[in-house]
Length: 457
Image 1: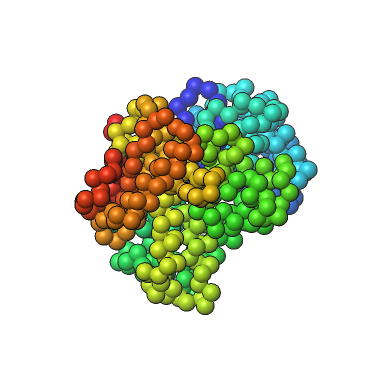
Image 2 (image 1 turned 135 degrees about the vertical axis):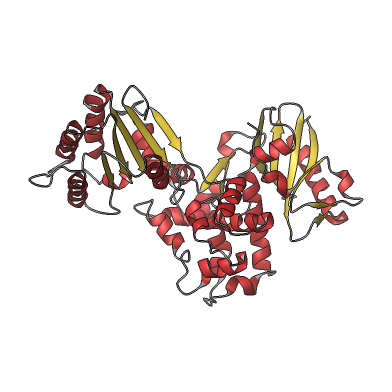
């Protein structure tokens, strides 16, 4: 806003993460021009809506623009007549405006390159939940918009600490244990957290949000993917298969499980899901990139497949009646792993390796023992942290049987990878570790409070 030149800002991130709210709050809901694309509408309807936004901003048009070049010419007229020192133009949900054969992107290129960038007083902000479109058409554009964006703002979900601050501001009265449990279902998505009702326990809120007759988030899954992808079915098939597998699947395994051709189309779909924040791609320790594994990381989607979909009888109190069941406990184990993977920096700080270069990923063996490791932190100081995540209601007590399983995983990992680094057994537990004779075999422990620790300024 304070720049001496025109600026082109791209704000992107997962649906419901708060992009529009951020921009509106920043500028106190005051813009020279603001517009939002219409979901699944024709070019004609998009142009009519754009003309309506121009009218709301004070520019009367004799007729609806015939194409986007004409529409942006009208926007230029509006800006020319503005008396504001900085002309703030906010176009939300821009991906929806790029309908087939509409010429929208070339018109946008012409507006910015030939006109707005030649001035010093335009602040153009574009926004969209279809992150893959923003990245491919705006940020990685190989035509007229190549390297034209001056500022990128990828908006990430809240961390646990930020959710705690938000819960405190809304007087929800939640313990950290309850915040983690809500995070495992809602992720750090502000819109979802806004729906939590004050005065209700997390269990009551879950029934209300996910399982009641008119539950606000019961149908969120279908709306979520349909709003981002014009043909959501293939993407839903991919996340459905990944939702059934804890540690993830390789590209070949995804193709086999979904029946999709292992081609460039599958590559594009995987990239788009990754860019939208639903899945992540991670390298397998000691192997080439072709052996990379894809894993579902969106907390709500995982909760949908593991819990919401299990409510076949449409029980409005499914959550409270299922607490302690195998369905819930299995989901809790997988979901807590996802939460930990979203808080790698907090884990690194707890291990006091914040200044050590490292990479992190789960690992699975290719041998006959079928060993899976929740998380490896591969450090350049000669150490690998083999991390196991445990979520429990009470302080976690490491049993002799579980210790033996962890030690076996370390042995198989060493044998298969032939690593020369020291492998430290690390336990990440919620809420805490109950010390006993077995816990002394661990090299390090990360507890719940560590995941809430904010970075020091």
